[in-house]
Structures are given as structure tokens and as C-alpha cells.
Image (cartoon, rainbow, N blue to C red; front, top):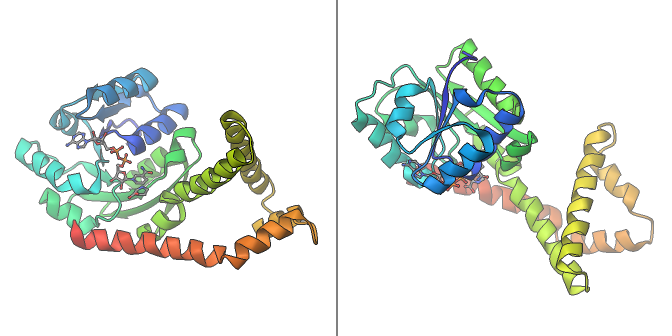
Amino acid sequence: MSNKTIAFIGTGNMSYAIIGGMIKNGFAPQSIIATNRNQDKLAKVAADFQVQTTSDNNQALRDADVIVLSVKPQMMAELCQSFIDSGVDFSDKLFISVAAGITVARLRAMLAQKVKMVRCMPNTPCLLGRGVCGLYGEDISCEEREYVTKVFSATGIATWVEQESQINDVIAVTGSSPAYFFLFMEAIEEKAKALGFSDEQARQLVQQTALGAAEMAVSQPDISIAQLRANVTSKGGTTHAAVEHLKSQHLHSTVAGAMDACIARAEEMEQEI
Ligand SMILES: NC(=O)C1=CN([C@@H]2O[C@H](COP(=O)(O)OP(=O)(O)OC[C@H]3O[C@@H](n4cnc5c(N)ncnc54)[C@H](O)[C@@H]3O)[C@@H](O)[C@H]2O)C=CC1
Ligand SMILES: O=C(O)[C@@H]1CCC=N1
């Protein structure tokens, strides 16, 4: 299975990141096909990673053993219908969907076949090999599970969940959460500029601090994140004042509410799409 060809159908932000992680971690470019309707996007992925590219999804469907469905959820039904219309026999292919809010049952209905199916919930740091992917599979062999684990381990941490509903929890915890961190960084950057730092300084200061904080957590797994925060917080000092303000504004419940909203939206999409 590890010699298989894998095709990414709709290579936008997310698939570009997964392909980048795979290439960085030793997957052969010739074993990867990227498709897109947009020629500029195909040219970029070809130039950056030397993978095969085509705007012909049906050709990719025919040539690959593993098909990664990575268009926006709203485009999925149309894409699946085009596969059916192509006449290509895809009954024995392994499908992987990275789409939020579309269940295995719905994907199989769209493809009009009970295909082997994995749902994967990745995040964009896959590009750097620092991603997290939640995985859930139905009717896949041990060998296929191993292959999928190998692909997504190349992009960071890959973890299987037992229940499909847990994929929505993964979206809230890791799929969408890079955006929460970026939003926090944006807020600090904006205030740094208001305090008079240049755009370049503000960007450098915020990104280096975010990186440093993340590396502190990663390099000291025995120290809780709460303790790392406490270590910055001198009694009666400046950080204490800042943290108390954030707490008074209900930061924890705001974040929990955001994650609940994320899950609720995924559940809503499951009904809509
Ligand atoms: N961006 C993210 O952080 C994450 C995205 N996802 C999922 O990944 C999927 C893709 O999201 P993004 O990459 O952000 O979107 P995107 O819009 O960047 O990429 C989708 C690409 O598909 C292309 N496309 C659309 N229809 C096509 C067709 N019929 N044939 C060939 N190409 C076609 C578009 O030109 C576009 O470049 C979504 O289903 C989303 O739920 C999952 C986890 C994280
Ligand atoms: O916003 C979205 O719907 C996708 C899924 C997780 C991250 N981006």
C-alpha cells in the first residue's frame, strides 16, 4: 500500500499543506497527483513540490489508488456526481475526505457506492510537519489504516477516533484552532502597532513570542500549561494585571463557547449538505 498513488482532488490551502508535509517527510513526488480547476494553483503546487498535476479529476480518479476529497463542503456533491458520470470504476479505491460537516454516510450517498472511506480532519500546520490530523475510518483494512496513518504522520500527529461524531470535536480542538491562535496574535499585533511599534516590529515581536511560548510547552511536557503561565505571572506584577483582566472578561468561557459554536456549525452542515 505504501507504493500507492494518492490524488488530491481540489488542491487548495488544506491539500497544499498536506502535500507539503508529505514531501518534506520523504514521500515521492511521483506518487502524488494534485488537481485543481485553477491553473495558477496547479502551477504553484508543481513548482513547489514537483508532484504530478492535472485539471482532469477523472484522470486522477483513474490513475490513483487513494482519492483525497478536498474541495469545499458545498462543492462536494457536484464533484462526486462528476465521478459517477465519468464511468471510472472507483469501487475499490480508498477515499479520504478532509471536508468538515459531511458524514461517511452522506459521502457514500453522494458517490452512490459504499466505498472504503476515511474522514480526516487536518489543520494547516501540516505544511510544516507540525499538523494534527484526526482520523475516522469505515470498512478499511489494517493495511489501509496503516497507509493512512503513514501519510498523515508525515504531516505531524495523526490520531484515530472511534466515533465519527468525534471528528467534529477534532475540528474545534485542532482543525479550526490555528485561527484562534492567529486571532490572538492579530489582537496583540494590532495593539503593538497602536503603542507605536512599526508593522515589521509588531509582527516580529508577536510571532517570536507565540513561537517561544509554544516551544516552551512542547519542550517541557512535565510542566502543565497552567504552570508555564503561572511562571510568567509575578505576584502583584504586570502579567497578573493582564491575566486578571482577561479572566474578568471571561476568556475561558468565551473560548469554550467558540469551540461549541464550531461543533454546532459542523453538525448544522451535516444537515445542510
Ligand atoms: N483550510 C483549513 O484549515 C481546513 C480545511 N479543511 C477542509 O478542507 C477542504 C478544503 O478547504 P480549503 O483547502 O481551505 O479550501 P480551498 O478553497 O483553499 O481549496 C479548495 C480548492 O478546490 C478547487 N476546486 C473546487 N472545485 C473543484 C473541482 N470540481 N475540481 C478541482 N478543483 C476544484 C478550488 O479551486 C480550490 O482551490 C474543505 O472541505 C474544508 O472543510 C479541513 C481542515 C482544515
Ligand atoms: O473553517 C472550516 O470550515 C474549515 C474546517 C476546519 C478549518 N477550516
